[in-house]
Length: 411
Image (cartoon, rainbow, N blue to C red; front, top):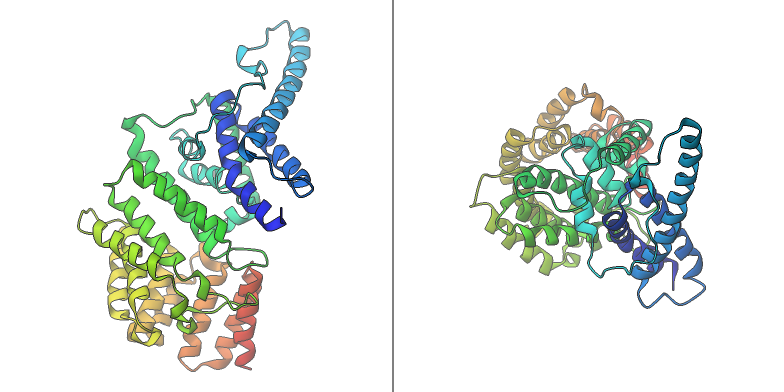
């Protein structure tokens, strides 16, 4: 088994194993620790041996045994404390049996809905799901939320403790809670996909396994609610964006901006499916942010060349998006659309107002957009410095290299 195959398989199986353990035993936080130890055991053993015939069952068995060990250790510690205090150990802390046969069902989707339980804040729902289901690091989640890593670490820790203290049942939500839970789930899947499409750190621009997992889970959600236009819109957005992945990097991993991509490498099948989905979703209403973003992606994908992109239509769609989702990143993209449709100076005027937003101050995207618009406006020295500022703030190595190359070209 190669390292790349092993990593992809373990990433796919990790949420399924965690879901199986928590569904059967509870103890979310301890189960997560047990799953991590099972994954470490697999990464050590599988390269030296054949992958088990049923790797999911292997991981569940190993993680269940480790969970039993961890809970028994906690049980023994509490019994010692309770013996001193004269208290009886609560029943829910008794160690579970480790010999229950694993079930074949994929518990990933159920785990997803559990992490998005309404007893958690929206931010905690998303952060916890990105950790448990998406497998993202705390640093990656922090960048997605535009907050410091220490803040996100505390948020994840508090979410786990709240689940432990609340006794939340593990299972699909009651029908009356479906809509509220579904919105959080969609946001989570959106962030997981984005991290796969443009990694916030590390040597790779793309992490296709994350994007593929987000698409897989979104397809599962759509099977449950095929008539929800935002679920359909999100799936369309993912497919239309994922369709460009092969053209986004050179063979040696360098970033290729959309205007310079070889559109023959774009996946025509995914584009056709995405366009069909967004065409199906938009007439249903009400129109939500995922449907609008999908429509924007469709305009990009259907343009025969970068020069033939219908920027006035994209600008009109961004103005609709601002009315339903007025966020700093949407405003940033709106400024780009204004620059492409009306000229760089108008885009730069909009960016000047965004520079006061603290959420974007240390985000490389704002500086990169400013650099690009300054270059379009013929202000080479200012553009070069803005590219350098963006490169210093970028966490992804391919993005750093691309931005530094752009700066060097203007020297």
